[in-house]
Image (cartoon, rainbow, N blue to C red; front, side):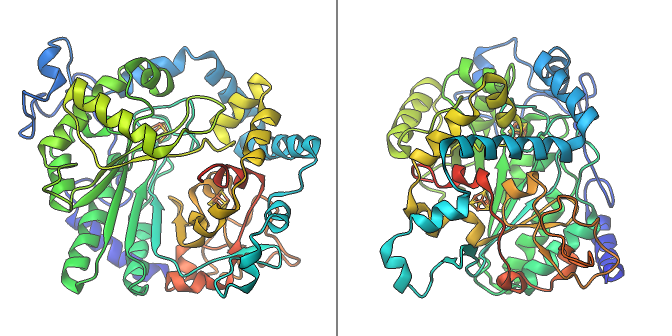
Length: 462
Ligand code: SF4
Ligand code: SF4
């Protein structure tokens, strides 16, 4: 089975403007720039670089990120714990903390809580998503690929633990080709390819996936939204000066993180210099047509997440503030602001544990449980794929190692089920991979794997 896709992968790799199979394209370091700092897309009227001669957008952010990581005591302690306990051990400890917090609050597990707080009308609804104490999938319409954990930033809330040091966890050409095959094999209802990371644009498979998917959708007449989960600063990395042209030409939707419209808050959460680079990247995207009312095909959405253990404010109210501040101060426009709740996992869970606030935060999530969010949970219509091809219900489960478990048909694939949750007697059941299915519809029989972190998806407006 895999050999078939290796051939496809080789073809894909030969067409890549970047490196071949397993391509990984870390940005060049300082002094190795391939190009000048100016971009054909820039307009001096909107560029903050014009007002700051000190800024040099041609250098990589990686050096600054690594320097900050090296002097961050909490991160060094975290690295030491990972070395001592392993990622799986850390994940188990984190999960035990969430459980303990809920136990102290007298709250049952997530699905117990959901079952006890159902909307009465749901019992008569044919599309009921909660049945027998489990979440049931709907027909999928989003294929989400986490194509690698490498990132030029190392944000202190990152739920995927990305950084410039994560160079080995990167999607290879076999897996990328298989994902494209699944997209083609899936029904017309699957209309979105969502690319995330790390910084997905810095992965060698990114441009291959985007251009092949767009070419297929053009040839087949299938509507396909391609989303790039962009950290903005990746657009300025050395060697990426043509990236915005590429995104525009392939009509890629940009969903970009910007947790505040103020420099101090953004840099505190995402690293020194990130705000100014982000503003420069947004200016260049605007110059290319992104966020313009005349180009509805070039969507630019921003994402806000809280800087601490609190829920996001009203999306519509905050969007008004963002639009005013970014336009008045930098001449920047965008389509919509999306607000998301911080999930109590990974770096944010470490922060909560360090501050002794895990119980307080879980209580906040539980007290703000909103049963109306359940019908819209992303795990109901998304299939999430890890960099190694493992299948998950969502990106959060992916980071917790909670893969979709079943009787895989591809005996040569897989690393077994490491979390002990999905193993059955005989050990035949294991995490499924993209090589175990022919279409996303094949996952219809599996219920969603939930756990206590899921309270982060049902708090407030979800
Ligand atoms: S930019 Fe995104 S992926 Fe990269 S470290 Fe920050 S939160 Fe993580
Ligand atoms: S964290 Fe839980 S509720 Fe949220 S999308 Fe994932 S599986 Fe669904």
